[in-house]
Amino acid sequence: MPLRRARLAGSIAFLALCHPGAVLAGPEKAAIFPVELFDPGVVGGRKARPDEARKLALVTDELRSALKDKAGLEPVDTAPQAKEVDKQGPLYRCDGCAAPIAKALGADLAVTGYVEKGSGQIFNLNVVIADAATGKVVRGGQVVIRADTDDTWTHAMRWIVKNRLLAEPLPGKS
Image (cartoon, rainbow, N blue to C red; front, top):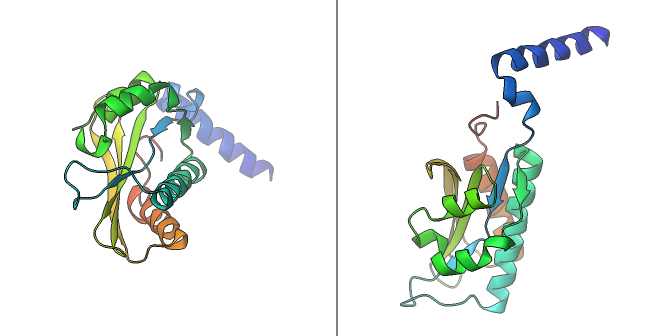
């Protein structure tokens, strides 16, 4: 066991020499915005029905939990910028407006997502992670949901996190 601790201490010391701020900086902060609904069949969009709103909240919570638990990101509260999100939104159409909003919240990353309604039983779930300082997309993915249940929606979010968003470590997270 002492050898293992020595190796760990040596690794931390090496990281501190190579990247002085990396060890002390703590976890990256992420503004994980609520997942939105896009219904292309309705001109000008529409508000989510109560059952859709519940599922959107469910997958948003799943996304926040997964990025915190599996990627070590620290979610920041997006509520202080809710008026700006409403003004700029929907975020999937605003051409990168989520990054400056995330930056204003003190986040390093902006995470947005939307569910595109295809039919009564087919949906596309899309998630994008962008650098808050530059707006550059660092990771993204899409998955098709083929049934309209809580389980299929949460399974789809877990799949996209595992197989698209975190298939490789996020930049700066080796």
